[in-house]
Image (cartoon, rainbow, N blue to C red; front, side):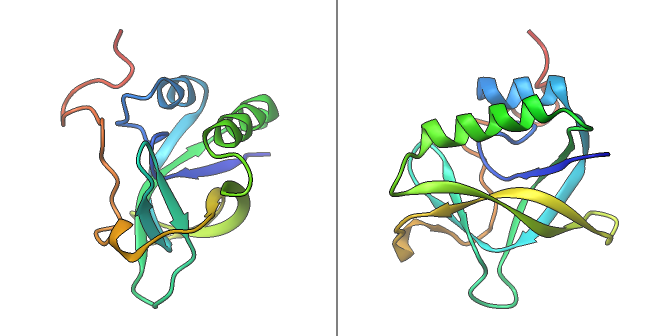
Length: 140
């Protein structure tokens, strides 16, 4: 059984973060997608909150982890270290809209902490420390 994971920040395919590279090596990239939600810049990483309005969308990538529970547990540990209680990431089931228009059920990490309006990334796209277009994120 396949386990799909939607990532929208430091774990995205074009991210230079070491955990993004690890995820890209261990899982199959399915494609880009959007999820209903609002994105906030939390400094070193972004946080996803549920949508406040119908048009709120966040862009990200979907990976198929297959039946690899170890990789999912490793991603849980990474998210826990990055943002410990009381402001933490909570893995939940959600639906994303793939680039082809189809909806898919995925796991996603929602941020459970305080945010301020000025932190909102209105475009819904996080791209800090990403590889330039055309660079190979798995090279090296």
